[in-house]
Amino acid sequence: MRHQAPCMLRLLAGLAASGLIALFAAPRPAHANFGGSGGGQQWADYRPPDIRMRWIDPYGKLMPLDWPVITRWEWVDSPQRLPVKVPVLRTWVQLPRGYELAQFQSSNMVHVVDPYEVPFSPGDGEIITFDTQAIVAKGNLVVRDPERKIKEYGVLLEPSFIEATIMTHDSCLDFWVEIMRKQGKARYLYNAISCDITEKNELDIYVFFSPDARWDGSQFRGALTKGQGWIRYRMPLPRVDRKVVLGYVRVNHASGSKDSATVQRVVFNGVEASRRWRINVGLGATLMSYTEQPFEYEVTDIAMTAKVVVNYVLVPEKFEFSTNLFGTVLTLTHDSTPSNLKAPRFLGINMRMGYQFPGQLLGGKWQALLGWYIWTMHVPSKQYGINLLSGPQVFLLYRTSHRRSRNFFVYAKYAPIVDNLDNFSTSNSETAIGGGYQITRPGSRSPMFANLDFSTASFKAFQKVNDMTLNTVSLGVSWNL
Image (cartoon, rainbow, N blue to C red; front, side, top):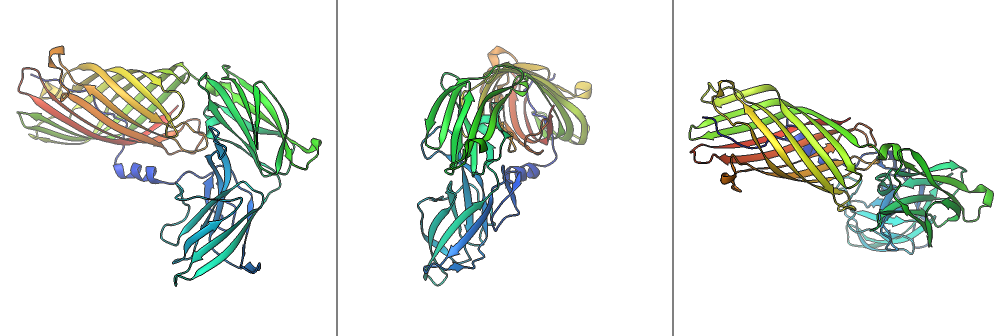
């Protein structure tokens, strides 16, 4: 008699776990070259201005230092305690081996202690990191050389640019809002937008501009609030299925004439935001280890598997229905004890209803899903294995959805295994964890992900001596269509 077991196998695919782990460990994707003397590497979302960095000795004379320097745009917490990120020019300076920083002083640069990312090879020398929004940034470094002698260096950082850099933070892109240049090329350092959602589900659009720029007015649908170096527009979240202009902003150099202002438009892409159907397909390989007692059956297979996922957005940013179908396509290797056991094939379907929690936590979105599974294992001649099962499941998902950087997701799942209501036990269950990392370019309309999944299940049939365990490791690729 065949016994029963779990809704299992996150059959997304792959061949080895090491490849995906390397992807997760990789640095952020590149979009533009650095300025600065250490330039040439690609790390930033927007190209920074060319940076002229000069070193000055205590007597006011220029020093020909060739320390590696890299500068790029970064988004950081607002110094004015606004609920959004603001842009800064971040600069990394690598000291010679054996040198260490004793003190850093500046009136318009901020020393960053333990930045989350350093674009230099570790171990080659201490790295100093500082942020600035100034047109001319000045600082003073006091360092100790390998002989523990104190040395003092002045640093002068001056960006060179022809026109303003105009930037959109991911917090706006997540709501399909972007700022675009319409006309004019006023010469100032930057302006940018960041977004936030209020408790009343209103959209706050913050427009920031550099100290050498001034706001020359705007035409916007929302309520206006002004601050030092920023303005904010508050409006209801757009609910249209077409591209619309939310407003226009005029920014100019602080000493520029009215006619020289750069005019920018803030656009909402309702075409993309209104998409409700989403389809994902996956293909790869799964390593499976199955044991059945008391018959001492053991099966170890590697099989090609396929999966199709269909999601439908019921209420944007809140409720979503998801269903997926997965199954074995081809057995690649098969080993069993006893040796005459046939290779199994799996087929299953999951149906879930999900709720997305408001706002963001840890830079991404969280979703809780409850659902039902149907799952079966087919073995020729019914030599061993498990019959058709169905039951509940709980699913927790964390994902990012940025358009200027590669996205990733992680999940955890718990599904009890029962063959009747009298046989419920927490030990009869499947647990699974996994995730995926985008391997195509940021902003791709049909991104591809590398996926890694682990699952384990155990089951003992009611009033039978039979019990089984099933463990899987899957690695593969999937595409959002």
